[in-house]
Length: 175
Image (cartoon, rainbow, N blue to C red; front, side, top):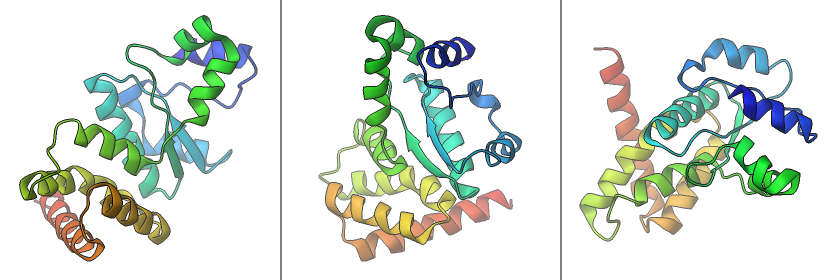
């Protein structure tokens, strides 16, 4: 929120904006594009924050931004980190920003058993919106590599299943 921006700015981190979570839109991205095509999101780690950051990631990727996700400690926001650990603590959290596929995988794998086929299919369903939003073929290749290693699914099978899910998402959007 606004307090996070103010405290960040006061400690010398000035390239921050408050999005007010679910209010983040393509219009915001158009404005941000005047300054950068790199974005790192830091939303609350609760259910609403996770849903909001996923929406923001997908919207940003669909507009060809380079995106990272700053995973905040539970029940902490940037202002809390600054107040308890100062500038260095916030800098460390910022340096640990993850690529969207890591974020999606970490969230999904908390609730999915990846040791069986059903779990792997469920994971692919969770990743499909990210795949669909990703316009860069390089980033899509990285998604496949990451999942091949971490979910232990063959790259060819992943691509086929993600492309099938992508078409399904498109069909649902046109209904």
